[in-house]
Amino acid sequence: MKSKSYKFLNFISNLFLPESCNLRVLAYHDIIDSNKFEAQIKFLVKSKYNIISVNDLHAYLYDGKILTKNSLLITFDDGDVSVLDHGLPILRKYDLPSVMFVITGLINSANTFWCRWVEIALQNQGKSYAESRVVVNSLKKMSNSERVAYLEKLDPVASRQLTIDDMLKMQNGKMFIGNHTHTHPMVNKCTDQELNNDLKLSLASFEKWQLPGGKIFAYPNGNWDKESEEILKNNGIDMAFLFDHKLNKKDINPMRISRIRVNSDTELNEFKVKISGLHSKLMTLKNRIV
Ligand SMILES: [Zn+2]
Image (cartoon, rainbow, N blue to C red; front, side):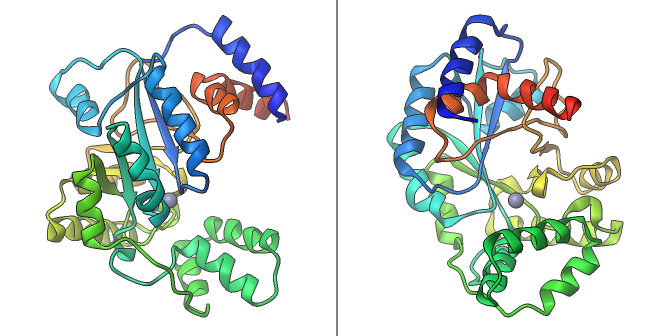
């Protein structure tokens, strides 16, 4: 959509959208534009939204505590180092809490997150970025064992990853460290045993690092199904976040918390439309029509 359209939609959302939601959760990945990210954060600070911590949300869901009006939680997936380098300083400047969901198997390693690994390895072989994305998307649809077998044949690609010290620094800077699995599988493509093993490894890592967030979980790629949810519960996970680009309804299921997808380089008008919930409604409508 063009920026002019977002300006118009933002105007519309301010005029007509009723205030029906009391919890918004934003899902970021990396920080590719610090200036635009800071503009988004500045807007949130001055707006009607109240930025809460994941502990505030947990206390609301489990201990009957009140949730502040227009609560908004900021989250990041995948443990990208750009969030530590460029996102955390901005959040600290405004003294805001947030959550980073990490892939525990990558911590303290020089390995690359598998989606990025496939992109780089295939581009090194002469494929275009678009072609590499087609492969990534097809891998997400395969069984977990097929995906793992494909990755085993790829040339290794080194990346900087978060260290345990980085995570402690983040946690001390009000960026809570949560669980995004050990290897970032598509949980609905795993056998029960594969998912149980992955969760046990991630939970053991949190225990080893003495970080409290192992039981607060974000579904990789947002892939969710009832069977996986049961396995998560059996492993003691008591909060799980989706990636469904929706606002939360009045009654929140702690294992199915909706999140709005945003990027650090999103223009402010587009960002405002997305967090208003209007964008999500338009997308739903578009999917019904198409
Ligand atoms: Zn992820």
